[in-house]
Structures are given as C-alpha cells and as structure tokens.
Image (cartoon, rainbow, N blue to C red):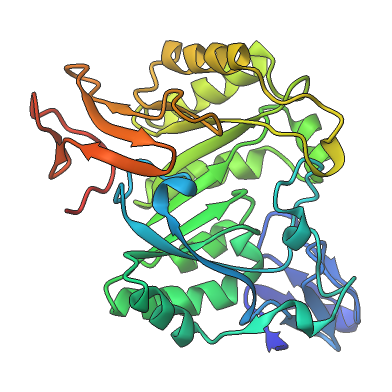
Length: 339
C-alpha cells in the first residue's frame, strides 16, 4: 500500500526533504530515499512500508534482547521490508536488505492492518508488540498507528533499532514507545560509514534522548572479529553507556559468519570475556553475553551480588525480582518489572 509519509517537507521543483531519520534525504521527483521505501511522487513523499508485513511471530522478550523489561513474557514481533543501513554483517539481510525500489513484488509481503496486529498480539496472550527484525524507523507510520492502538489495549511497545531515527521521530513516539534495544555497532565513525553507510553521532544522540524521555533502553553490540573488538572501541562504548546511565544493560553478542562477512571467524569466548570485563570496569551494573548459551545471561543484584534472574537461552527459569527490588536485600533493580 502506498501511503503519504510523515516527517517530510516540500522543497522547490517538486523535491522533498525527508527527516524521518538522520540521513535527512533530499529526494528528487520520482526518486527514492536511501531506505528504498519512501518515494517522491510530484512533491509528495509516499511510504511503501505501511501494512506490508514480511515477518510476524511470537517471541520471548529476551530474544530482542531485553532482559530488564517484563522478563519471561512473550512479545508479538512484526516487520516490513527495508532498512536505512547497509550493514555487511546483517543477520536478517533477506528481509532488511530488500526494498520497494529494487523489488516491488507484493507477494513477498502480507497485508495486515494495525488493528489486526494488535488483535494477533492479544490472541497470543503477548504483553507487548516488538517492531523488529528490520529497522522500525522505516515503517514508522505503520508502527506509530499500531502503538497507539496497542496502548489502548494495555499492550507495551518495543523497538529493536539501529538508533538512526531523527529527534522528531522520537518525539512522535514519546508516550507510546516503552522500551528499545539499540544496536551500537561501533564506536568509530569511519567504521559506521564504511560498513553501515551511516554515522555514529546520531545513534549516540538517540540513546541519550530515549533515556531522557523515559524510554527504557538496553544496548547491543555484535562483537565482530577484527572489526569492532579492539579494546579502544569497546572501552568507548562502555564509557559512553556508563556516562548515560550505569544501570543501562549492555548486551555483548557473539558474531556468527553471515551475509557479506561470511569469511570471518565466529567470535571466540576469550574476546567476549574481555569485552565483558571492559563493561564491568566502566562500572556498568548489567553486562550480558549473548549468542552463546549459558554465558553471563543471568541478572545479579548490584547491591548484594545475589543471582536474581536465572536464564537458560531465552527462557527465564527463576526470577527473584519483586516490584523492581531484590528479594534478598531490597535493593532497586532498574527496569520495568510489572508482575
């Protein structure tokens, strides 16, 4: 479905300026933005992502990963095609790296209205809806309508995002978006430009602003051998997160060869442990290791050190957090723990 986009302005000569994300595309008549999903048609910007679903599944919220947001609950995950990044290591490249500009075959997508998404989430007894798998900023018009309906039905809304959205986009999401996991891929702008076709600063700005407006934020870094696993980059990420909030969880995820980086080796355990130590040395209270089962997945109380959440893969086997507090010492555990 072609739908008029939001967050754009008309310019002279039928050009438009899209300010949905930090690319700030100036788009000539008949052209698409970098995402390949927003097209200028005679001075009107249209999105082709609205209600065109390429993935819809029930997931554990830990899979996002969100460890401090309703642990043990189920979330209804939804995505359309398209992304504003071109990451050579993308693990969902089959749907994120296709777009309407290059492939306009509607058979690849299923039409689902915002109301149908909310109904499916309720039918599957999910507590939240996750906008995930691809970049939710690209289908923001669709996500925003779903989020508004979801709120009315008592559902939470979650983004799994590269964090490259504009401040205007986040302002519109304020009050509807409850939590986000942001991929902080590098702490080097040149790597962001070379490997993702993007920039570092807008991602950092989004993390800060989400935290400022009350969105619960967790951050994931996919640890890629010889790309972002240097002590300098990892210390940069850890120090940045610690400066925003020492209670912001950092997920360090193991890389598995895929897409255009299939020639690289998988992340070894030693590299993950070194990254974990860097996070703890930066005084981050919650550092987790992902994509390797049984390795630093559990949540410990930062006050008394007792294990509070025991995880196995994406399953929560034990939870000793009550009303956001440690059951042993009554210390505060930051997050959203709504029993």
